[in-house]
Structures are given as structure tokens and as C-alpha cells.
Image 1: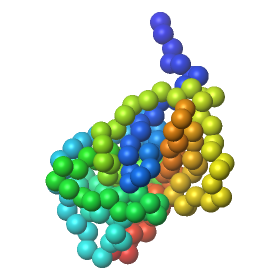
Image 2: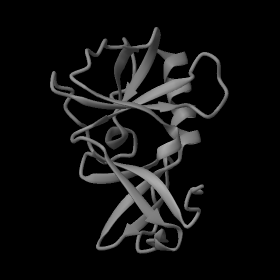
Image 3: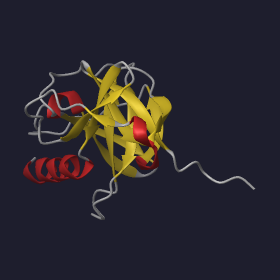
Image 4: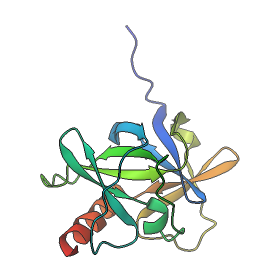
Length: 156
């Protein structure tokens, strides 16, 4: 019998604008490409639209845009990561992030997740910047993202 290795954290690395973003693997519902996007009227620029997924209308957002890293083009060749929303809102069980490349599954040793304290301040939707070997990645604040999406949808 084998047990899960508690000495490592499984994550999914995506590219959002110029930044790499590390998502907890447990929150990822599905990764897709070439997804039709339906625009949402009066939504902020970072809320690029919604996608149909398993009977749900799932809000699609640009994490780069939301975190102030610039916009990302929404193309017909898009790649999307659908995430489970953890806030318990029955109206918003999922949301999706736009990504420029196929997500990469990685295992990070627990003691290998080191906070990068070189930056003075990070956007509110970023929990922290971590170092992954030679490169860094943003750890998103999923609760803050969910709150921003809920507020934007209510206002749209």
C-alpha cells in the first residue's frame, strides 16, 4: 500500500501575462483549449467573458489583468483552466483563468516553497511570490479572486 507523499505539494503552473502562477492541484477541475468565449456586458477588462462548461456558465478571467500585470489577448486558440471556487457560493461554483500555454503539473517539496520577500507589495489577488528553484511564481489568493469575480458579476 502506498501513501501520498506529504512532503510535497502538487501544483499546476500556468502562464498569465509575464508571470508564472502556481495553482493548487486540488482546485483544478479541468484544462481545455479553443474554448468559445461569450462576452459579458459592462464587465471590467479582466473579466473577459464566460464559457459554457458542463451546464454551467463559468466566468473567465485574465489573472494578468486582475493582478495588474497587463492584459492577455483572448484568441480562438485560447487555453483555459477551470477552477473549483472554494467560497461556497452556489451561484459561483467554478471560475476559469486564461493561460497562454498548456498548464504544467509539478510537485514542489514542502520545504522547497520559499517566499520571495524581494518585493515591497503585491496586488491584493496575489497571496505571495514563491521561488521555484531558479524561477519565481505567484501564488494567487483564490478567495480574493472569487470575491472580485462575484462583485464584478453583480455590477455587470
